[in-house]
Length: 274
Image 1 (spheres, rainbow, N blue to C red):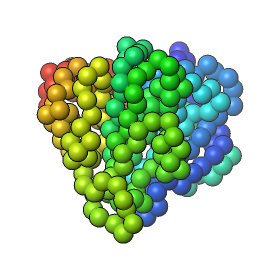
Image 2 (cartoon, one colour):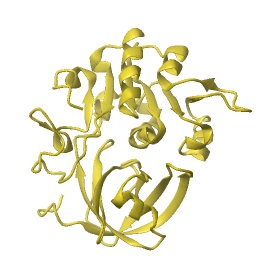
Image 3 (cartoon, rainbow, N blue to C red):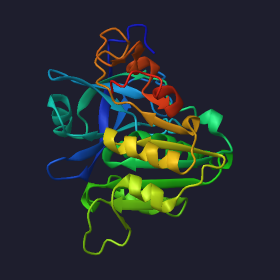
Image 4 (cartoon, rainbow, N blue to C red):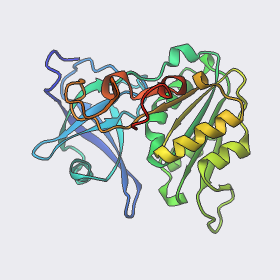
């Protein structure tokens, strides 16, 4: 990390993919730094993206640390900064500072079976650790993805998900029935209970809307998962990234530094402010 962490590094947008259209659009951006500044990150960490003249926003890094050629961010259009990012084109310049946060303890999960459970744009931070596990396939046991969205049009990484089926177990779902949809219909926690992943020698990683995470954790507990086997992310608004502004605190914890990744054993001990 640069000694002056408030100064963003300049990066160029090299690729843009529209993941989801409609009222809640999602785009995936790939970026490259103009200078080699040894940006090194862990799965689950975030970076602060700057649109000059508009502001900056903390975004999960969705690419794997195993790839050194680019950083990838999948972004839901919501506010001023993310709307400005959605207007950007290939070759446009943005600022990136970070990385921030603690990351997933993937080294401790070697030889474990990994179950990834995501909803909507919540697949983005999971995507980093999932592809890291695939890139070091011999280090891990069985890999399973349970992922859903409101509709099939709201699923991100559609083409990649089809390729993923060749490498691991993938269970998809939509909230309500659709013509020609042949997979699970219902909410993600219901799909978890339907597929019944085994807690034996397993780690479950979940990310999505807070209400989804709440019921996914309950479903995992019902299936026999212990608190220390369940990991999630806390998406409190992170403004400075360095634990100074206090916007993201949960009790004495600053999510931008102590999180965003927590085991359920850790998270349930904190004030229920998230």
